[in-house]
Length: 248
Image (cartoon, rainbow, N blue to C red):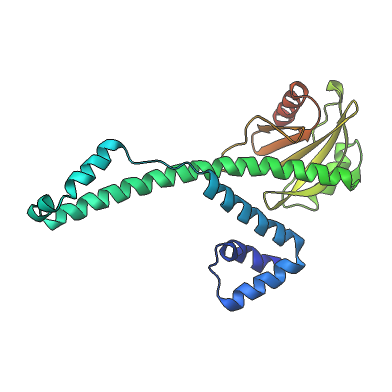
């Protein structure tokens, strides 16, 4: 089993939906592939967080009283059976719709959280492994072709030297299970990783987050998402990433 085949089965494996043969094949692949194993662990972690953090909503007292009243044996004997079925169906539909919207909102919120966690994790790994830059250059005409040749899109590579942000190079990394471009800038003594990828239909990330001592700033341009990670202060990082998104 290769990574492409495993990608379609990792979520089903996490939910226990595979048969014995497929389950063993996926487990064998996960044991040998760190990337797919990490994706599997993220699914398990997200499911655990949903189970522990999704808010439980009790039925309103008026609805509870109404159901209790309808459940009295004497009244149940007098009323047509179809009415009981319709009342139960309505109550079930209301509960299902409520659960859908609550769970959807929670999943979207957690997806944004997970994106920030991924970006900070990638920034820290690159720093600790001294693999921050794969193509070292302050010339966007060198960095952009190098990245474009290795991706299925061509990321913009703005220069903001006049504002004190110096382009030092770029690298490839992963965000949201996709290979993305990372532009590396330096501001005084601070390194800033900027993840650039085509804009998606997903809800946009919050403009600013702080995680593990790092600030994560987000901006969306005409057709690209920009996510910057650094230990530089928020009042510097937010205008910087907004300037990148607005650059032409």
